Amino acid sequence: MTGQAIPLDAETKAVEMPEDHRDELRLWLRLLTCTTLIEGEVRRRLRDRFDVTLPRFDLMAQLEKAPGGMTLSDLSKRMMVSNGNLTGLVERLVASGHLDRRTSKADRRAQVIRLTDLGRAEFKAMAAEHEGWIADLFTGLTRKDQDDLMRLLGKTKLSARAAMGDTP
Amino acid sequence: MTGQAIPLDAETKAVEMPEDHRDELRLWLRLLTCTTLIEGEVRRRLRDRFDVTLPRFDLMAQLEKAPGGMTLSDLSKRMMVSNGNLTGLVERLVASGHLDRRTSKADRRAQVIRLTDLGRAEFKAMAAEHEGWIADLFTGLTRKDQDDLMRLLGKTKLSARAAMGDTP
DNA sequence: AAGCAATATTTGAAGCTTAAAATAACTTCG
DNA sequence: CGAAGTTATTTTAAGCTTCAAATATTGCTT
Picture (tube, protein in one colour):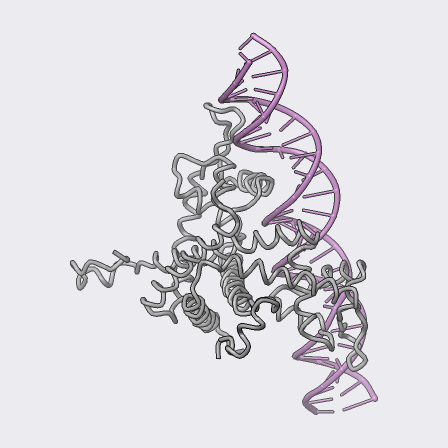
C-alpha cells in the first residue's frame, strides 16, 4: 500500500531498473506545501495586522535575541539568505527607524546592527500575536504529534545537511 | 523537559497568565528551517546542473502531470502563487520555447498552457536527477520515519487549513 | 613591513513575488 | 435582451532574492 515493491523478478530486474524514489519526492512535496501554506498565512496576517513583511519580521526576530547586535554576516548565516539581500533589508529598516547600524570598532569592515527602542517595542507587540497565530495553526496536532514531528524534522535536517556535505 | 507545565499554582494562575506557545513556535521554526535548507540545495543544484530556476522547474512539473494543459488559474491554485506571478513566469518559458500558450476555445478569457516537446524532454531529464537528489537528502530517515513524517505533515496541513477557515 | 589570501560588505543585473487596480469575457437574473 | 456581478488575466509598483563582481579591511607569511 505504501509503495512496497512487489518482489516479483526482484533478482533479475534489480540491477538494470533505476530505483524508485517517488515516496521521498511525495514527502518533500508535502513538506514544501505545508510550509508554503503556513508561511503564506503568516505573511498575510503580518501585513493586514501590522503592515510589515515577513522578511522584516524575521530580521527583527533575530536581532531581538541578540541584545548586543549582530553583523550582517551573522544575520546572513542565521537567516539563510544572501549578504546582498540583507544589505537592502537592513537599509529599509534603518530608514524607518527600526534598526540602528554602526561600523564595528573592532573590525572596520563589519557593520553591527541593533534594534532601536522603536524597533524592539513594535517587534514585541507583533511577536506576541504571531505566537498565537502559530499555536492556532498547529492546534490540530496533539502534544505527542508535535513532539514526534519535532524529532522527525530534526532528523531530516541532519540528513539533509549530511547529504549536502556539511562538515566544511 | 519539553515544556511540561509545572502544576504549581496551576489553578490560581491559569486564567490570568497568557498561554505559553513557545513549543509551537519552535516547531514552526524547525519546519521552516528544514524546508529552506532543502529548497536552497535543490535550487543550487538546478542552477549548477541545468541552469534553470526552481519556479520554472515547479511550473514545468505541474504541466507535465496535465497533458491537456492547464489554465493560469489552475496553475496559480496548484502552485500557491499569485496570478500575476505566473504571467511573467509563463512569458519567459514561452520565450525560451519550453511552453506553449493559447487562448481557450471554450472560454476566451482563459489561456491554456502546455509543455512543448522541448519543454517536456528537458523536464524529464531534470526530473530524473531531481528525484535522486531528494532521495539523497532524505537518506537519513528510515522507511518508518518517512511514513510517520508524511502522516504528521498531512495532519499539520489539515490543521493549518482549518485554522485559516478553509471551507469557503 | 610588503604582499597575499581570507573576510565583510556593497553594488548591479536579472528574476521572482505580491497586492491592488485595470481590462476583458462570461453568467445570471430580471 | 441587457445590466450587474463574477471570473480570468494582465499590468503596475514595490519589495525580495540571488549570484557574481567590485571594494575595503584584516590577518598571515615571509
